[in-house]
Length: 264
Image 1 (cartoon, helix red, strand yellow):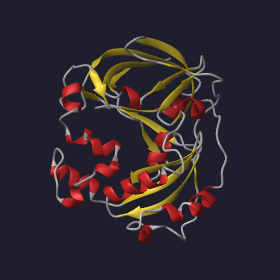
Image 2 (cartoon, helix red, strand yellow; image 1 turned 30 degrees about the vertical axis):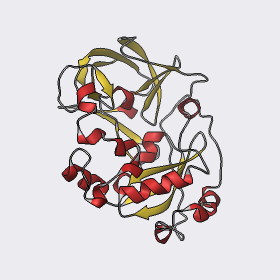
Image 3 (cartoon, helix red, strand yellow; image 1 turned 180 degrees about the horizontal axis):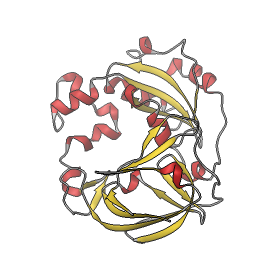
Image 4 (cartoon, one colour; image 1 turned 45 degrees about the horizontal axis):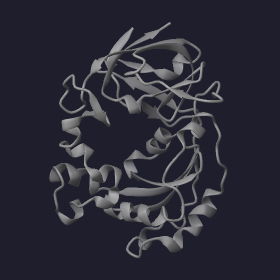
């Protein structure tokens, strides 16, 4: 039995992807649990910022920390709101400089459909794995988060910036020529971003996941409503555990929950 605070699974870009659940004093190579019974029990909360046993509000934070901590600022979800390049503070300028003022990539990822997204260069290909994409391509590489954000805003007028998680988990995947999709977006880039367009980079990343069996329909496990669950693990995709009875568990969506894990 293991006990710990859930955070998003660590990954290795292998074929298929390797997944690890990391706790304070231990870790689990989740791929090794495929076809085994896994029990998950809710124990308590632990906010990822203040570490108190307070109900989780969003992104692993209690409500007060979500509205106070620098790592939950609005610019996290909306990169176009980044202001560190202007030397303007949102919540903690030192933290914001460290995160925002580094190379960022705007990309296209193929999963339930072709979507546009933003990530720090250092997070490639982790970001695509976390989203459950099966292919991806880089479009621009810019020196800060703001430029990536305004690029995403411009491009999502011509394609989605969302994914359908149900389609991803039932393997109902779109097909597309990502190189052709990238080429058609060149004209829609903001003027200040055009010099950063990766014109000659045609590399398409392909990602495979450790899934033995996909569910036909999915039902989401909510530990607040169902504090104890046991099922046979059949796959891992994105940040989800897929079970034989069609239950799916979003590990990242449950960050800040203290759980007991029993491996049978």
